[in-house]
Each structure stands twice: as structure tokens, then as C-alpha cells.
Image (cartoon, rainbow, N blue to C red; front, top):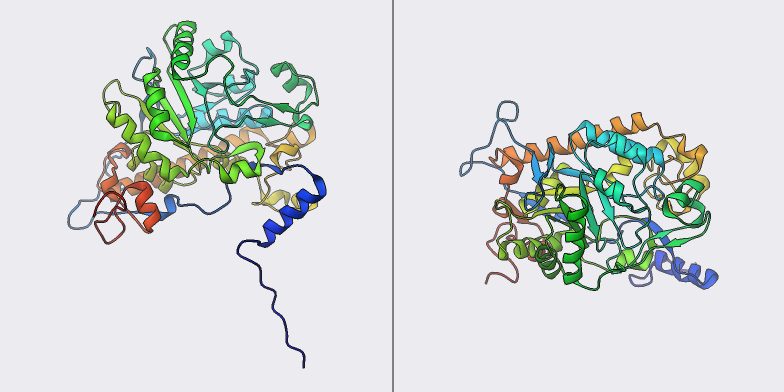
Length: 441
């Protein structure tokens, strides 16, 4: 009787790798997709909180207050951004997203007292009207940028890098450049758009300081100036942003999403969010700017999903977090409601990442009028607001369990790590020990 052979995939050449080699050989172009890194890297799941017992007193969840408010931009701005919760909406452009999606994000964020961000390509009237607090992104492309909109914003975010692609520019393929998108960006309709990877009017942090001063003059020193960096060399990048005059630094880890980028970029450039936070905090502490009067606030993004993630980022030193993919999922992206449509494209709900193609069945990452009509901005806003409320309540629950009356009272001492890698990256002890790899004997 012949011996039965059991197929065995190689750890190095697994099925996905082989399929990608075959695709590259057939098509001769690199793979482009949306979303963030899919590979397993140390993340917030590798940390646990030390809840109260004998040595700590917990707070009663239904009777004792746990604050969630945050003030951003206290260093120089006459009008700092005051938010009810420390969970903001990341920059996602009109073009990458539909106008209905941008409106829904603004409405949902406003319902819970937080901010949303424009992304590349300018500010739509719907987004400005829907957003009680709107951060205007200034990117290397300068698409859609005009001084009038800068003055209408509640804060300005200079994007130097993005977690999914630090050192790389943006992509918006021609099928998503509708007449309206083209007009806002001053581009031809239907032609692929590639954004620059660096700003055209500076080459270093000294030039950034000049740009920040220019923006302050344009806006009358009213609004905070954020600087967003992709996580690669966070200690030095944060230090330089602070020295250039930033009010707020946004730090985006490699799990951060993108509307479209090279797959090889998403998976192999940048460092995990967990590894990026401690050196960024160390830079602020060294400059005397971390959680001090007139200091610089730190917003962390990249893979934030739950209240536990929010609480852990804040415990490690963030003042607030920013979410992108989680917000899109809350609106209805990857919804099982459209399972048949996903199947027709060879994918399924929860795995869809072809945001660059403009065929999103949920009407979020598309410019197709028929698909966009599937997203009701009011319904999407309510879903997003529900999600943000749950995330905030989860973070409060954890803070109370640690005996903290405000989320910002969480600290590294409240955390331990489950793996050696996470302990080394987060600079907290390995669970059950006092050992911090690389820091203690």
C-alpha cells in the first residue's frame, strides 16, 4: 500500500510567500494594498495591568469618578485643543475615503467630544461642518492646501512621516480620482497620484522651525501645531520636533494603516508602536517637556483597537491616542452585510484590504457614487460614537481597577510584560520578575 504524503509548508516559503512570488512573476509590479502590517510583532496584547488588591485600592466603577479629558497644545497656542476623551480620529483623506465617510467621522467624533483630522487633499465643507474640532493636515504634497482652510482649522498637523510607510510618499490610484477629488487636489481626473516623500520647502529640522513659525503667523498663534512622525528613530525625531517648536508630537507605529502603499513597505519599514513609545517619552522627559506645564503632548497611533490599548499607551506615557482602521471598521468597513460583494472580489469581510481599488462594498474607501450611497453619514456616526464610548469606558474600567482617578494617572509601574521582547520594548518588568531586559541585571 503506497505511503500517504502529507503536504508541509515551509516556514520560510509559506503559501502566502509563494503566491506573492508567483504574482510578481506574472505581473511584474509590486503589490499595493491598504491597511497596516499583518505580521505578528510585539504589541499591547503582550502587556498586562496590575490591578489593585492589598497593596493598592481600587475605585468603585459606578460611584467614583475617573477623568478622561485632555488638553493638547498648551505650549504656544492661544487656543489649545480641549477634548473630553483622549481618543482622536487619525488623518484619512477625502479621496482615500468617500465624502460620506469623512462626514460620518466628523459627526461621530463630535458626539463624544473628540477631534478628527483631514488627511491629504484638503478640507471638505461637509467635514468642517460635521467636526466640532478639526485638525488640518499639511503634507508634502500640498494637495488642496490653502491659507483660508488653515485658518478655519482648530489645529494644524505637519506630517513628516506615517507609520505604515516612514520615508515613503502616498498613493492614490486613478480610479479614485473623481472630478471632485481632482478639482480639490488640482490634478487630472483618473490619473494615478503619487505624493512626495518629503516636504519641498525644507531639508531638516531648522527648516521645520521656519515652517512652524510661518504657520503660527498665518493663524495668529491661535491654534496648536502638531508634528507627525512615523516610528523609526523616535528619540531623535521627537527631540527635533520639539526643538523646532511643535506643540504636540504624533507618533505613528508600523501597525498604523494607509489607504495605499507597497506591501513590502507596510511590512518591513518602521518599528512597532510598542517599541516606539518609551524612547519618545524619554526624549520629552530629557527636554523637560513630558506632562509639565507648557510641555509638549504625545499622541500615539498605530494598531489602537480597544480600551486596553488606550490605557496601555497612556500608561507608557502617551497623552492621547489616534485611531484609523478601528474607526473605519466601526463605520461599517469589512461589514458582513456585504459578504457576497466581498466574495465576488475574491476576499471576505475582515480580510478586505484593497482600499486603493475604490470598490469598497461598504461605501467608505471609494469614490463610486453608487457604493458611497450605501454609507449613511448619520448611521455611521452613531456607530463610531458607540465604539468610541465603549473604548473610553474600557480604559476607565482598567484605570479604576488600578486605583486611578484619571487615565493620565496610569504609569509604567502599573504594567508588566508577558514576553521578553515586550518587556524590552516597553521597558517594564517581565511578569513575575523585576527584570527589564537591557535595563536591569
